[in-house]
View (tube, rainbow, N blue to C red):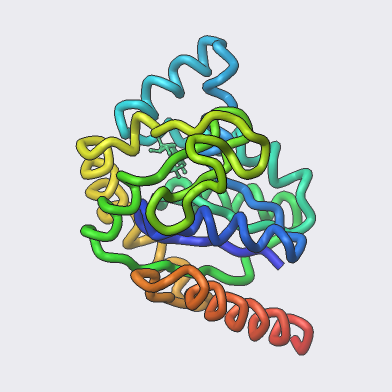
Length: 216
Ligand code: AMP
């Protein structure tokens, strides 16, 4: 079973995808994959880093290439941050068709812009393993340190207010036709609520979808 998590910045889809790793889903975050590439200070890595710091989208072909390599090695996955526009949707469908696979479920986490700005402003990321936390809702056990590996937590350049506003505007414009494309398998979940409530809803949605898959 393969799933896409949609949601504007700060909806929490990354943390929910991280959570569902315990059910054996690989969490594929294109943002994380690109940050990894950016760490390699190659020509392409530096280009990616510059684009990300400006709050802009990385070129579709670059993202598709990184993504394809990752999907090939995963048995079942949750996609987080991809696809973000129609060109990426077409590229994803091509990659999946080539691998004889498909998307079974799409979940859209819906939040207000106010929630997005507030949550991203207090989001911190581990400089070593990419673990993500929120200083207000899910703070780290030790201040400034990653719960998973003890690495130093930092605020991403693109989580600063001006970059966030730019990212939300771009996201809304480009995601609309993508959500239409997946409407037959799309479920909306209100994500302005607490973490536990949202998790319960997603568990139920995934359970129903898995049962339907087994019956068909
Ligand atoms: P995220 O971690 O999903 O918030 O993504 C952080 C940044 O990574 C974005 O602002 C983009 O610069 C880049 N990025 C992530 N996913 C994509 C994508 N599907 N297409 C293009 N750029 C992406």
